[in-house]
Image (cartoon, rainbow, N blue to C red; front, side, top):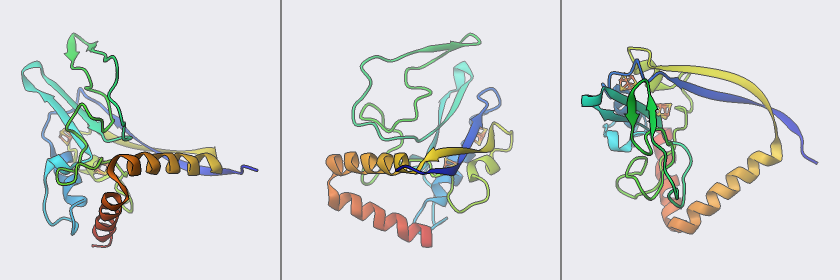
Length: 179
Ligand code: SF4
Ligand code: SF4
């Protein structure tokens, strides 16, 4: 029997009109996740990336979401307030067709963890122009559903990268969390 339990859903609202492309969010995210913590920063390791096209005044902060084993068959372009956004501009997936959201050394997918353990996501704290706003709400979910999601995600990573590489990365991440 599946039981209902409460879950906190964490959301970051992105206001692309306020973002000025300063990339402070990328810097703090990569520093927080460095091993040991804050030992360095490299935006390529950040779990938020800012898609920047200064000549068109386009700055889109995007959070790393789920790993996708295959790229999309078709892609969309958006025109919002007269600005045309590139294909993949709003997509959060770590997928084969883009370099974003991949750990540069291992190529393993990166995913935003909402700065687990911190009171508030650090990218939100460091965004001085309030382009990022943190919100929380409570939802009821089936407990079993969550476990299945986790197992499916892990299985696809093991299939793609192999168990050894995955275990190495988990070990490195746990050192970083303790540090
Ligand atoms: S810190 Fe804020 S303004 Fe700067 S790039 Fe990130 S979202 Fe944009
Ligand atoms: S919430 Fe934390 S982990 Fe997620 S992108 Fe922002 S700084 Fe990185």
